[in-house]
Amino acid sequence: MATELQPRAQPPIERSGGRAAIVLRAVERVFDDGRGTLVHALEEVSLSVERGELLAIVGPSGCGKTTLLELICGLQAPQSGTLRSEPAALMPQRDLLLPWLSALDNAALALRIAHVPREQARRRAAAIFEQLGLSGFERAAPAQLSGGMRQRVAFVRTLLSGKPVLCLDEPLSALDAITRAELQEWLARALQRAPRTVVLVTHDVEEAVVLADRVVVLSPRPGRIVAELSVGLARPRARTDARVTALRERAMQALALASDPTSARA
Image (cartoon, rainbow, N blue to C red):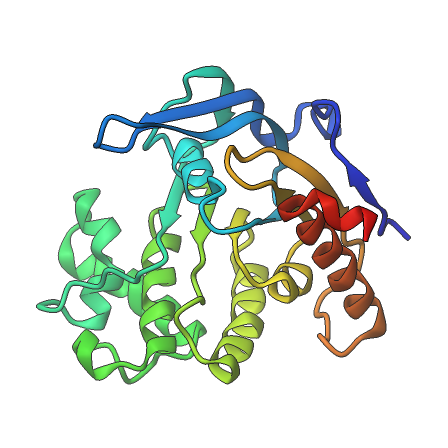
């Protein structure tokens, strides 16, 4: 079973004979924090993501996880290295629903920006609402929706962008534990219905192991890939499964080591 946690000392070879949707080679990102200080966000990041793969990225706060997603989506550019990605849509941590639009019109926003006529955009969004358990809330204002429902609407909006790559930045972080667990199961089912290449940033190691095909661990800033975990378990995965628990512990150990290298000598 492919469950080995492997230190990342060398850039990986592109997977599956050129089927990668995303390829980064020795990518570095440095930016000015606005106060004249240069921030070295990412260093020598080499990574490839296969088409249809769900990759999770974990690491300590401030290690460049969001920066990495924005690079993949073309919202930032690296100082050095090379990056190739199929078109990607970003779902940010906050749902960013527009309060003056209904839930349905918020979900259809990506289509409207692409100049799809309003009624056609609404019909396409409504079809996904039905699939994802949002029927009956099409006319609701964002303020009338629970946190979990707002995240579902934001996810529908991201899906409807039509991009082959989805970059999800802590999409469930603002939810309580029970709602978060429910939404993790919902997200797994939603991605089975509409398969995409997905890069998921999360602070929740258990979430990463339950949802992803592969987990990479970033070091503190400047972010470097220091470990990789191939999950190798069929979905759906119960978080109580002993194999999931073992994988979570391996990932937690790698994260602890990345955050404090002296812990290896403890």
